[in-house]
Image (cartoon, rainbow, N blue to C red; front, side, top):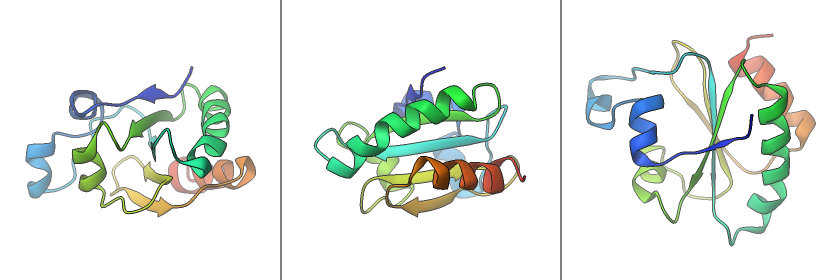
Length: 120
């Protein structure tokens, strides 16, 4: 499965209700998730994109992988205090999200998914 482009509406259906976040984090997903915050004009983001797509295929059914274009979804970027891109948000089950700025190699990304999301 490919990484899914996430809009504000999709975020509220798949991740969390934005207006309820002040009360605490309540993840709506059925499995752990990874969100890639990117922009089309960002060189490092474009280098990360094929890695994100490959990892989405490899972890299909285990981890939901999303992409958020920061130019189109500024509110979502602000929600996670995204200041530089690419920024990756790891969302484990029953835990608060972990935000990390910067691109990753495929090996680094898989290691982080296994340790942060799948607890392997």
